[in-house]
Image (cartoon, rainbow over all chains, first blue to last red; front, side):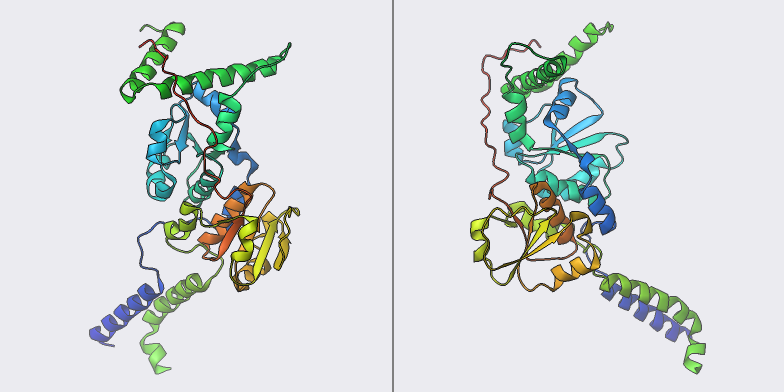
Amino acid sequence: MNTREKLSIILLSIGIILALLPLTGSRSFTVKPQNLLSDALDEKSWVTVDQAARFVATEDSSVLLIDLRSSGEFNRFNIPGSVNIPYDRFIEIAPGIISGSGNMKFILYSNGDYDANNAYVIAKGLKLKNIYVMKGGLNEWFNTVMNSRFTGERISARENSLYENRKRAGTMFTEINSLPDSLKRKYYEAKHVAAKKLDGGCE
Amino acid sequence: MNFIKKYKVILLILIPVVILVLTRALDTNHFRTDAKKLAEPSFSGSNIIIPDKVNQLNGEKLLIILGKDVIKHDLAGVVIKIIPPDSILYKENIRLIRKHDGPVILCSAENDLAIRIWMLLSQMGIENLYILSDDSEPEVLKYEFRPDTTVKPEL
């Protein structure tokens, strides 16, 4: 077999392989369907609004909330400390933010449950880790956290803790979303300084 | 025989590669390419169908109940199949869905589950797939946020 024949066969082979492979640079799911199904059915993939409120109230830096609504909705108000990745751009943007972020937890939320659950499966399909969904979305946040009321004569320690947590997160939500954008960053900085002073820090 | 002997080395490389590529291309139980395109109906919510609109879908309708029987509506002319969510990927179930000539509607007691299974099946290239929901606009905020104009944070 001469060199020309060899080259022809190799080129032909490459041509066949390329013809069978999809020629697209778009992202695709890289996990096995059965593994993704297990993730989709995982009961631990949900967090309650009370859990999310605790992360907000304590300003837990190991948790990042991801708001899947449009940027317009996000700018009007959002859960303090969250970042905006509109759902229809999630596939392009999320891997860059989420992958390689160590043990950080990412909680997805939107107005309801629909976008967050879709985004959850997409994230898992793209092999992104530590993804959770805030069950009920902002509708549940308003219902449980923002409209939290205590009516009764006696309150148990657990109820009191829940109520205090909701109150703190709700107050932060209202305060920060009532500020003009220019003051939001200063608000966070001021809160950090105040927290350091309470902890006996040197600032 | 002479041909095989002559091209033995190339055939040894080429045949396994072609087999692998063909297996990948023809295997129906894996995810298709371009996740964004496959997820498109979920961006607009066009994959959600309310019970009153089910009869407006063309073709024979297959309703898959994920888990327990959750039918609260009178859906006439719909083929109903109950499949536990964890067995949705069994070969016979996937074959049933793929071979069904008409819309396939997913339904679960908790909508979350049907939403997640919808995305999974869609990424496997299954089309004409819907989620049965009482709420046609699940992403509408039912509350209004009123800023507190009296807020004066200590900065």
